Amino acid sequence: MDAKLTSEEYAQILQTIEMFEVISQAEPGDCQSYDILKEAYLKIGQIEAALQVSRKLAEAYLNMGLYSSALLECEGILQLAPNSPDIVALMGEIESRTAPASGRNGSHSSDFGLTDDVAQEKPSLIAMTNGRGKPPAGKTFETGKETAAAALEASGDDGNEHFAKFLTFHHIVPEDEITSALERVQGTNRKLAGQGLAASLLDELARGGKHEIDALLSSLIDSTKFGYVPLEYYDIDRAVVRMLPESLTLGRLIVPFDIVSRTMMIALCNPFDAAAKQAVQSSLDYHIQWYLAKPAAISRVLRDAYRLDSRD
Image (cartoon, rainbow, N blue to C red; front, top):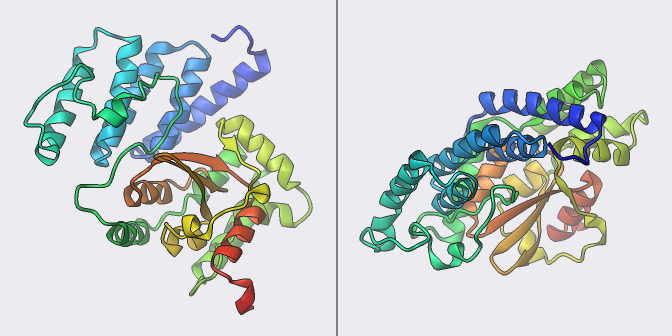
């Protein structure tokens, strides 16, 4: 356990673990939940539990076709547990799937077949980097957007119910308030049409005046360990925002706000929207780093990017 943790922080991490264990069982493909779980176990010194979660994360990446991400996760496991034949076997399975597409014909490097750009990163298990996978060979930008939009529509889950359960579980918002707010948000979002902006559960909770948006975000960041970005201070290129389909940006309040090398930074206000996050990862040929931002700031960026105010 981290010696710097207070008893309150330790108890909070245990609550986080309990909550995300439930979420990961309900949503076995939610890579973000596995990431949070892994980090939480590491913070309290439960290395073996963290390794088990990391193995599940690698398998989830593999099932999603995010082969680079899966290989990186396996590399992280081997840093802490070098004698893991099952992980080496898993890496062999990943390589066998990627070899035909890459033309390597089964050749192996000292990095277990990692491509040069990925091998240079050498991540540790503790690193919280998401969405390292590339789209399948031959996927164009537009077909990636179309595939993501179709997958999102088919999922039918916007993550707001998981979000509501999390806020209640951690005593951030009383259950009666969260239930009524959730109903209003779901009702609004069911009626979305054209270029309408989705409603945010955080915004709805703050609307009544009982909760400050800053306090809600602070509690959420403390509980999930998500990074935060003050999006209102960013000068964002419209073209970057519109690299995602409107079903993700306008329909889920998700905003790409910066690109550095092969990494894209993306802001959202619902970290439990697993279907949207998977759709983002499948539509972009970038590493993805997720950040929380104020719903109002995200809405402002989207209004500007799509010039919505000029149509009001």
